[in-house]
Amino acid sequence: ETGVTQTPRHLVMGMTNKKSLKCEQHLGHNAMYWYKQSAKKPLELMFVYNFKEQTENNSVPSRFSPECPNSSHLFLHLHTLQPEDSALYLCASSQKTGKETQYFGPGTRLLVL
Amino acid sequence: RKEVEQDPGPFNVPEGATVAFNCTYSNSASQSFFWYRQDCRKEPKLLMSVYSSGNEDGRFTAQLNRASQYISLLIRDSKLSDSATYLCVVNINTGNQFYFGTGTSLTVIP
Image (cartoon, rainbow over all chains, first blue to last red; front, side, top):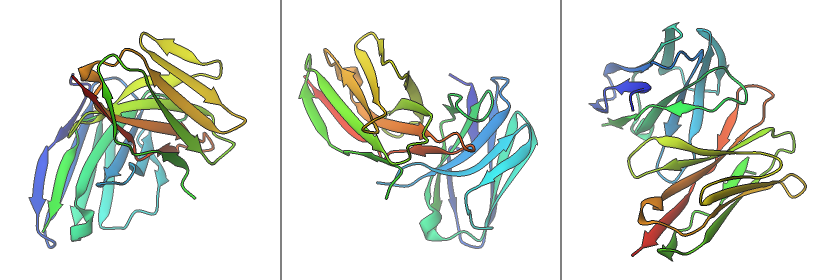
């Protein structure tokens, strides 16, 4: 299944590095999401974009910076992260926001050293 | 208080058994409910939406109890391939907030 793809699949970075996560959806959806999944914790919604406009920012630290150039692509720019930011970062998309089913990408497993 | 709570398990059941999971939610304004399945080191995938009248999909039955604010998932005739973590998801619908439970771990044993 390649409806939602994410790159890279794994990333190791130092606290002073700058990196970007990429998500692309091929489903013709209009809404895209970034989630963080840490061990033993529920998925945490970070950002929501609807028709390229950010509609939710769940008090995410500024060291995470999203970018949505079009409805098919979503980026998460990372800068001066902390070790506690190590987690699985999942991208999802849905036809529109609200009650719609979300389809997830495979995730980027991030380790911050 | 957490928006969505699930018993983390693990539930270890033999093949062919029937197993049920419950999930409680705290916000009475919750509108949409889902069960997702997540295999080890994989992304969550939709298992089924949960409708007010309850719904069934093969061996899986989902129920919603608004009065008590919980949803349930029943799996009949468990297969080895059912081993996974089952995530309860609730949408408040006042915005774009989807709340996930921590998941219930199921292992079906031969």
